[in-house]
Image (cartoon, rainbow, N blue to C red; front, side, top):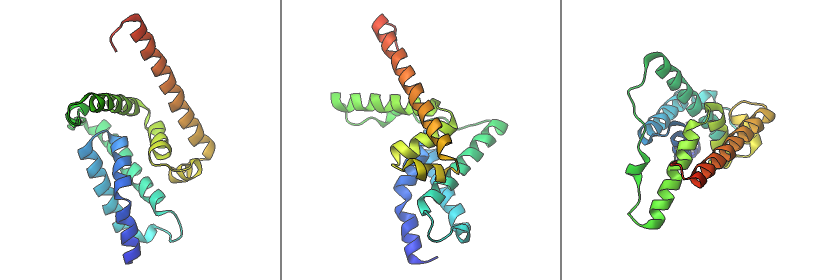
Length: 173
C-alpha cells in the first residue's frame, strides 16, 4: 500500500465513524464497525480500483458489515444495548440541554427508519454526498436512492405533525 493511499484511508476515519454512528446508534458499535471496515479494506486493498472513489468503497464496506451484523443478531439475538443519549449531554445550560434533546429526537427518528432509508439519508444529509455519489456507493439506481430519501423525508414530516398534534392536545410526547 502506498503512503498516499494510507493517508487517504486514515483521513476518512472521522467520516466513517460519523456514518457508522448514524447506522448503529451506538458509539461502541460505531467504533467496532469502523475498525472492521478498515480491517476488511486493508485485507482486500487489491480489490479497490485506483481512480475510483475510496470513500464510496469504504462506505460500502462499512454498510455491508453493518447489515451482516444486523442479520447475525436476528439469528443469534443481541446482547448490546444502545447508548442513552442523555448520558452524552453537554454541560448543563439551557442551550446545551435543548440541543441535546433535539439531537436525541433526531437520532431516535433515524434509528427507527428502515435500514435502506437510513443509509441513504445519512450519506446525503450527514456525509454530504451528492445523490449520484450516494447511489453509486450503495450500488443503487439514482431513482431508487431518491425514492428512499423522499420516503424518509415524508415520514419525518408525518411524525413531526403527529408530535405537534399531541402537544396541541396536551398529550405527552
